[in-house]
Image 1 (cartoon, helix red, strand yellow):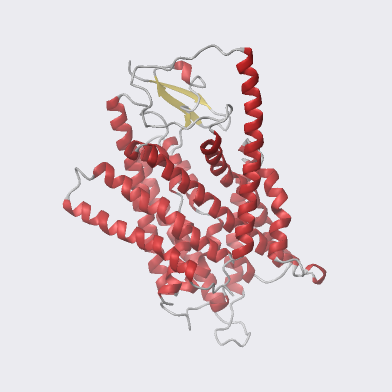
Image 2 (cartoon, helix red, strand yellow):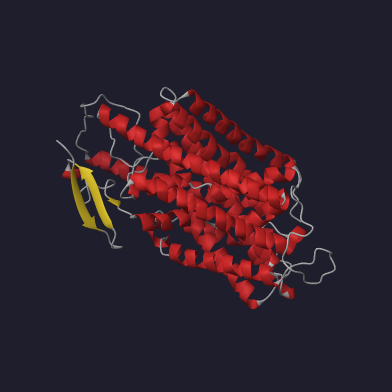
Length: 479
C-alpha cells in the first residue's frame, strides 16, 4: 500500500508531516516519524545557528598561529572540505534510503551517521560512529569548560579581593551546577535557552568587533593605540602554527551531525543542498571577518579566548558572564547524547528512552519476535531494574562531567583544547568517516576522475587529523 501524507501543526506553529501506511506508529500517530517541515529560509537560519558557536571565539588566535594569509587560505580550504563532506553525507542518506526502499527496509526513518555506517559496515560501523560521537562531544565540552573558566576568572580578577580565584577554582566551582544540569533526563527544560544563546552570541560577536576596531594595539609595542592593519603581521607563521589553526578551524566548522538532522526535517532535500552551500559561504565570510579584525587589532597579544583581549569594564564583564551562562546551558545539551549513548552501550537502553534504530537486520523480513504477556513478578523486576539503571546512569553522568573538568584543569587552554578536539575527533568524524562512507556507497559507479578526487579528499582529511598530533606534541603558545 503506498504511503499517505498526514499533516498537523506543532506547538511552535511549524507544519509537521509524515509519510506512512500505518497510523498506529505516529503521534497522529507515528511517534518518531512526524517531523517539522522547514522551508528554505528557516533551514538557512537553523544551519547558520548549528555551525556558528563559541568555537569561533578561538579563530582570531588561530589566525595568529597561522599568519593572516595562511589563516585566510586555510579557512577557505577547511570550509570547502567541510561543505564537500556535508554534501556527501546528504547524498549517502538518500542512497541508503533508496536502497532500503528497494529491500523493503525502514527507508522512511530519519537518516544519520549511525544509520549510514550501520548500512555500510554493520554493527562495527555503528560502534565506530557511536564511540567517535561520544569522544567528540565530551572533548568539545572540555573546551567549553575552559572557555567558561577563563571568562569568569578574568571578571573576578578585576576585584583585588577575588584575584586569587584562578581558572581551576572556577572549573570546580561550576562542577556541581554542571552535574545538576546533566542529571536532567529531559532537555526540554533547557530548550528556551537556545533563543537567549542566539542573542548573546550576536552581542558577543558585536562586542568583539567593536573593541577590535576601537582598541587596537601598537605594532611597535609602545602601548600606544594604532590603526587596525596587517602591518607587521606575518603572512605565514610556520607549519606548527598552521597545525593548530587547522584544528580550531575544523572545530568551528564541525556540524555534520546537525546538518543531517536538519536535512531530515526540510521540505525538500534537493533545495537544502543549495541552502547548505549558501550557509557555508556566509559562515566562511563571517569567520574571516571575525578572525581578521581582532587579529589585526591585537596582533601577537591575541588570546585563544578573544574575550580576554577586551579589557575591563562593566559592559565587558556582563558580556563575558552572559556568554559563560550560555555555554553552561549548552553544556548539558551537548553532553546528553554522549551520555545516553554510553548508557545504552554499557547497560542497554532504558525503558523510557527511545531506542536507536539499527539498519542492521536482526530478524528476517516479515517475521516478528514472540512477545509474552508480562507477569506481576516480571513487572516488579522491571521496576527494580529501571531504578538501578537510573542510578547507574546518574553516576555515569557525574563521572562524565568530572572527566571534562579534570581535562580542562590539566590543559587549561581554550585554544589548545579546540585544536585537539577539532583535528583529532572532528577530523575523524566529520572528514575521514564521511569520505569512507561515500566511497563505500558510490565507488562501483564512480569514474576514475571521481576516485582520484576522493583520494585527494582522503589525504587532506588524514592530514587534518594528523595535525592534532603535532598540536599535542608541541608546547602551548597561548600566552
